[in-house]
Length: 302
Image (cartoon, rainbow, N blue to C red):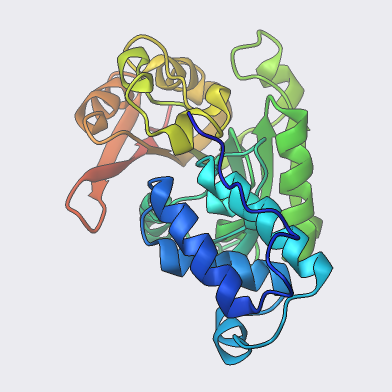
């Protein structure tokens, strides 16, 4: 595979922003990147530390040496199919800005279906509720909910220390660190319940759910760059659901809600798991494409 790009920060004599963007778009196109002109503008905006509109408005301005170096470095990474979110370090989710790194999955619009489903079932007007986010990653699910539920408090759990550092930073940046706690733990551990030490009103999770066969078919942008531990759901993609559903009774208060993001063929199977474990399925919530993307269930009173 050829290395992209060959352009260096110094091989165009005093390049303007426009010249860099044209050359960058051509290299992105050769690398097979969709929407190369738009992505070149995004990389240009990153290089000059401004918005895309400034890139257009200042297109005839010469780039500084430092801006050139940032642009060329970022262009090389994108031509190697590194996700744009990792290059910019940011991704919007639920209209909030989240820092992301290769230690975390990149938040996706599909996951907003889970937030919508939870907010349709949960409110904190009658008192503070406790939320548990399993596999919190960037913290996007927990922090999006805390931004909507002003009386809620939550705990984000992840087996990755690096991911937890990102989640803590996001909580701080969003002004939610006072209501969010983050714990390094593994739900497969025998000590997991003891580590948490309490029950919750809501358990939410976007666990690894890609089957082994599907992992081999993932786009290189995902397979070569996003954390495999957050993707690999085992032979059939359901390992994490089995593990979490098996301990839900110890995690949830009576009438507590569990909400899972699921793969596009997994909704009915996960709903059946929940119904067989003292949980009453509320709904399989569809995303905007009509795909069952979130399964919600309520714990039956013991």
